[in-house]
Image 1 (cartoon, rainbow, N blue to C red):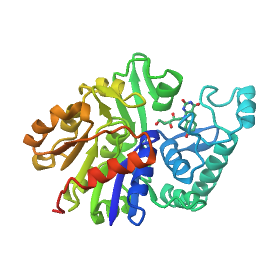
Image 2 (cartoon, rainbow, N blue to C red):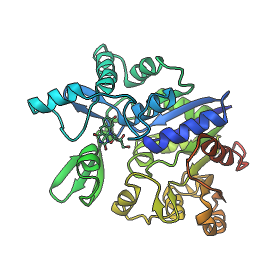
Image 3 (cartoon, protein in one colour):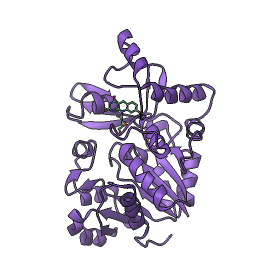
Length: 317
Ligand code: FO1
């Protein structure tokens, strides 16, 4: 079975581990958001690609949710002493190994896709990690006094500075990679991870040509709600949704993605039992909805969510 998953960082990593656990023999290709990427102190940092790679390799810091387990910060302290880089955005020593290797491969002329394949080959991660695009697309947040990189808004300001909107710098000249288009076209099922619907899934969808690929694939497209009972599971999905005027609810996000039968994305949508009341209305709107617990607590629970999404019984078109 071939499964394509659209995913962001921390939430996406947990969900993709669930996909791999539920379908260990499947060909799993993960289309990863690169909107958080940035150049910092001379190296290319790809937060969502690294969060998923480290989690699938089992070397991630499960406490912080990002970066490497057993990390040290000697180089980062030196950078801070020199006043270089972002003192509030810690690049650990092991993590810097990843960024240095990636930067070296990019400087050798590899695409981000090829560089990612080289990095991930170090571990048996069991899935294929595919950057959404090989062209840079960087999410910036419009705040009262200008534009800041997403990571500055997210990490330095903890999203406490109201976001007036989001801009993906470079998106107009970006396109999905051939590998991404093939993964979506050849999939038996396409899953939208419960990642941030604005700055993670939304950024992936914003790459010109991505929505067309999802509209034309014969595979059913099934999403998992990142909102449970009106609250975001993690991160700042609530702040992001507010910034684009979408209500913080499981059915509002489904409607934001749209029913495929009326020109949107979704064939199916999983909501948590707390939002079961929305199921009938969503079905009325052409989205095959179902309710089940959606907390990605354990690996078995994550795998059960994935199986529920795949078992929505949606035929290939
Ligand atoms: N998140 C933080 O809250 N503080 C940090 O200092 C930080 C550093 C960092 C370095 C590399 C990297 O790949 C991720 C890092 N993150 C940090 C997490 C990052 O903000 C998130 O992984 C995503 O960008 C949001 O999903």
